[in-house]
Structures are given as structure tokens and as C-alpha cells.
Image (cartoon, rainbow, N blue to C red):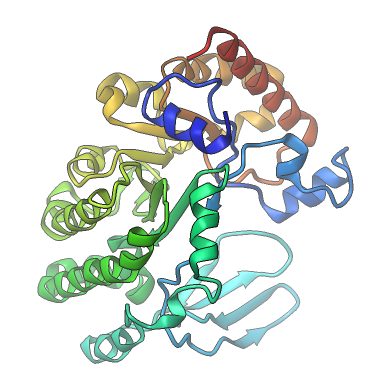
Length: 362
């Protein structure tokens, strides 16, 4: 059984040879550099080293076309302030991976929106790779790994355009404007992806949001229901009409208050489920059953605490694999404070558990 067949059967709670084996959100660059000094062979691709199952994404461009011209505005030994090709001005630490400080955004008023939305023409041919052809479509049809399509969601995109603070205030001060942008975005996602969904064999769609923090979502269920739920239904209905029934949302933080609404909106997989934000895969499985597919929820902090903590985390989460629909993965990109030996210990525990399941056959 190849990785594609395995992923699809497992995520539909059907019998397969074993659960899928992935690290879904990857690693910090500093993590890989550290591990090269701790036993990972120099130059070795980390995914190949651990022999993870393969997956692939279709590179459809949902960004502004033409892009903004990126430029450095200020720079010293530690920091760089630059405008990105999406029009955001941010401050980055140059010495290591860290969260950027966002300074400015391309939309401040309605006139800015009228100008920038011209960059989001769904019919621009540059949105599709220059290799789009019968040959590429045959590749997507016959390849032995699952094929995904990633897009930015409604909260995530509008936040990228105007910033978190301005967006949250605008829900109350100018709700019609926010609704207009989100409605536009739903139509844009549908029209941009129409050809890909029609012509290519796609196994899942990922929607990036990042719309919560440690203590809860950035918006109330009421706001979600009014502004986002109709658009989620519109987009997921379109996706499902093309035979794709695994629709994921990627959001950090604690979004549990919105989980029922994501499900109502046609989403059926949530990740990465940050443990530090009190998200818990075991609780979610008990509450939502097989209606909710899960990826992630392995506490990255336990990988720094040692073998006993790693074993405790594994003993609690790994049994969810017995029923299908759950892929263990670290609950964010693996950070650089995780040693190679600790990560190896975690991976070996995971491989051993998967091996035991495969002996029984799901």
C-alpha cells in the first residue's frame, strides 16, 4: 500500500496496512543545524532520514499579482525591517528563527482595498505553474503520495491585509467593509482553484487561519457565524462538489469555542492543536468522535523534558491511532531547544507503536 492509499483509507476509518507517518509542520532551520552537530548526517534531508511518508502540494498562487516590491527599510546587526512582497512591513531577528514584529499593513482605509483587490484577479494565468499540462495532471493522478491544495482562510487573509488590531476593530466599526472583503475572498478562492479542482486529482485541501491565541480565539462564535461561516460553507461546498472530502484548517492557539462552527462550515480536520494552549486530541475525540479528523497535538515541550515526559505524552496520545483518523505530529514546527537524541527517542516510540498497530491491521 502506498502513502496515498494509506492516507486516504486511514482518514476515512478504513482498513490499511498502518497509520500514516508524518511530521506535518516540519522544523526550524536552527533545529536542523543543531542536529547536524548531534548525529544527523551532514547534508541529509531530515524527512528522508526518518523515512516519513511523502506528500505533495499543488503550487497554485493565491497571493497578490503583481507582488509588491520587497525592500529593506532599516537594518542593523540584529534586526531587519523590511517590506515583504505581500505589502507587510515587519521586523525580523536576523540571528535566529522567531516570530516577526508586524509594523504596517497594505490596507488602512477603503481606498487601499479598492487598489489592492486589483492584484487578486483569479483568472490571471500566472496563478498556475508553467508546467500545468496533461503531463503534470497525469503525474498528480498517478503519484504514490497524497496531493494537497493550500489556501489562506478568511480571518487569516484579512488580517494579513490590514493587521490584527485594525481587523478586530473593523468588525464593530465597519462590519460591512469586513463582510465585503471576506465575501470577495470566498469568490476569489473558488474561481482561482476551479481549474485545479476540476482537472487535478487532489486528496485534501488545507485552509490556513491562525486565528486564536493561548486563551481563546480572536473572535467570538457570534462574529464567526456572521462573517465567516457563510463563506466557509460556500467554499467547502464547492470543494466537496469536486470529490474532495478532507478539508483541514491550520490554526494555532485555543480555538475550541469555534470547533463546532468549523464542523458546521464543512471543515473536518483541525491541526496542529497546541498543548500549551490547552488543546487536547483525546478530549476532542471523545467530544466529536469520528466527525473530526486530527493531526498534531504532541506537546513540543515534552521533547525537551526528557524520556519520561515523552513516554507519558506518547502513552496518552498514541492510542488514538488505533481507531484511525489521527496522525501524531508535533504541535508546531520542532524548535531548536529539542535535542536530536530526544527527538530520536520520540520517533522510535512512534515507529514502534505504528508497527504494533500494523501487526493487528487497522
